[in-house]
Image (cartoon, rainbow, N blue to C red):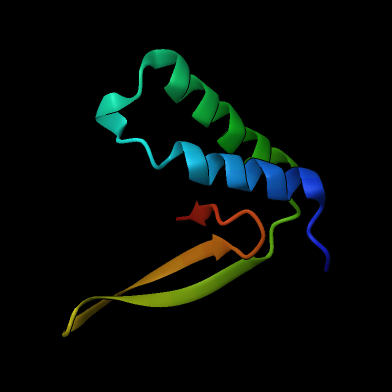
Amino acid sequence: MDIPQHILFMTKAKESLEKLSITDQDFEYHLILNYIIEYLKQNCRHNVIKDTIDITPDHSKSISYCEYCELSFD
């Protein structure tokens, strides 16, 4: 499936905004980031991928994330 442009653009915007340390984000900055995340939650046709990541050599954790917008799901 082709990812719609608006989802690609919002995903790239989210990635760019997340590069700034949370301690350096003011209220408005954090609000914009949250609006983008909510937009992606509501407008992406999520294709959820289930995967496992290694936490330590003896411990792993299951994760779920969207292939398109890269949001994670618990």
